[in-house]
Image (cartoon, rainbow, N blue to C red):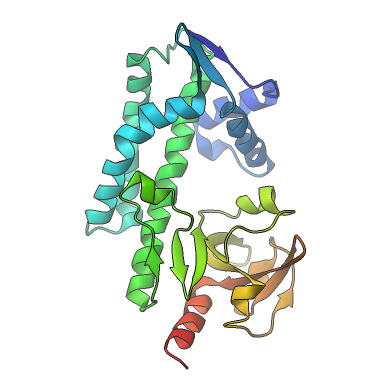
Length: 270
């Protein structure tokens, strides 16, 4: 077995991946941007044996996602426990099996240090998968309890998880993200959804808070005054509504609870 890492994978990427594996809490600030870049590069890396080349992305899909994803989501949805309490336990149970599955498949060997990067990639991909769907389940339950009329994609099925949108409200298509990192890679491009439910760091309260990011088209249906700012400072204007420059227009940033209140008023005809 031969592992070939992406050409742009540097020593700095290697060092941060090792730090992430030891304790992901040891990675913070600007280092996270480099770690995310490192994992993107590992997605372009591959394993090669007598049967040919197999990208890390395919290894993760076949060895980890296919056997574990449906079961994890079913347990998350069917449990009466708070998703934020049960999800870490369910995710950790799968994570403990990742190294064993890769070793059994001949894809990880502690004696061959380069295989550590494939192990790290699978851990990372599983972690973001598990956290992402935990957040979706939390949001879906909250929207239901709040009385919001919406349509959610079917996350129990793999095909449903790859639907165009996570949620539809008032005919507008939305995506649910655990962080606004996606903005960094799409800042100069047109947005693919009408709105996004995500979290931003609130500097005043020293914690991440839920927000809704809306295109101007969606905002026109529930609008009001907005304040110009940056994505980093958007929560500073809450409970007001912010707007930030994005591509050739503006992106509206509003607190999640304030967004729900406006939606309810609109849906109830107020």
